[in-house]
Image 1: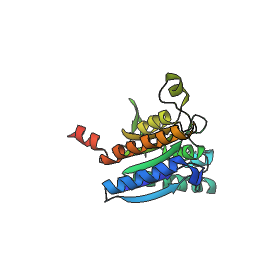
Image 2 (image 1 turned 180 degrees about the vertical axis):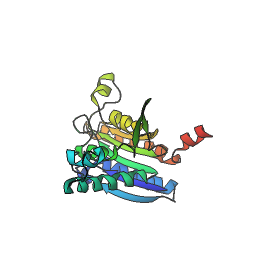
Image 3 (image 1 turned 90 degrees about the horizontal axis):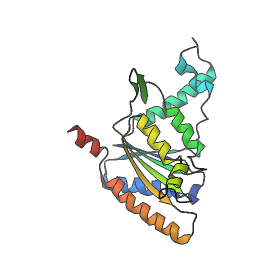
Image 4 (image 1 turned 135 degrees about the horizontal axis):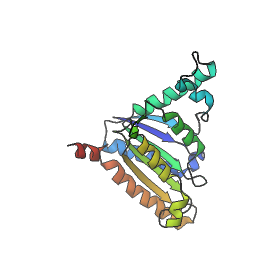
Length: 215
């Protein structure tokens, strides 16, 4: 089993999402010792934001791609191939200004490729990257999950659910720590709740629900 560990926080050792992804990976390996891990730090190796050159080869308009288009396409292919080769993906996704870090969005833009992670049919889009488990370490300074107004403001977990579902991934598990900036007691409670969620998220085998439904 291959696990891809992805961090995106810009806060280095002060990051709660990085702390949680590390604990998730440790717990997953303890529960599933046959797992091999590959690490991707998007704050250190940030993909350039999506551009016309990144899209160029995909459109098939030009007979001969430019050097810039070839370079961008090689990066996109490297990232999407790494993603598709993974059975489990652990993603650190802090909430920045009600959404995800731009570094994480830049990575996702490279993964969203027609014919690789999705396709269009006469009945609409179909995801091609099913059969994977994604565990998201979601960190938030405030509390957004308990009120309708809070849920309407966050475009972090909601966006990740939408785009991963678009890729065909139905087994998405969230480990959430929120209220981290609201004082020592709320932060301690948030981390304790997240660590309980880690045990639940890592105990179940990858795609166990999908396997049971298929049977």
